[in-house]
Image (cartoon, rainbow, N blue to C red; front, side, top):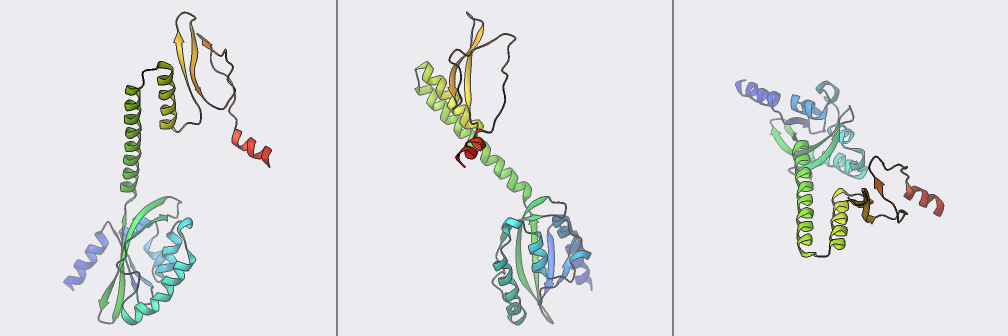
Length: 231
């Protein structure tokens, strides 16, 4: 009885999601951690097929009916032998909560022998923040590599017009922009004069901007227009 109480305390207090399902794949345990990770209350899933609940949670673009059928068919083997191909295979997947929010989770399923047969246990951990941090770090690393490459190219380039064009091109690349330009202030004329344009738009050769003036125009989706004309 003490052992059962300790086990119940571990399951209830775990921040990881813990699910138990029987040999027929019916859910018999769904702890508080699993509720918090998935957004699905215990009462709504107890007694349901684990695979049905799982495939409801998985993002639509990751749902594969053939895989679901394979899991269902293997349940009979699990009931007979306590073995299944999905045991001890770490998964990482995106789940969708009832409110539409998405979380990245890692899960593993393993067998549990009992006096009356077999149960299966699933442990799930929410790794959304770790994945987002890793992606941000990777993006930052790519930006730093781009800046380092720009610096190396600038130190090798001695021709000023070529250098300005290089800087503009690399800035466009870094910002993932479609067009880019560089204007330089000319104190003699008191105007901003374009030095570099990287665009397929038609820019007047005498285009300049003076004090108190601004750029006025409109933004158009030229790609959509081109596709419409081609159609």
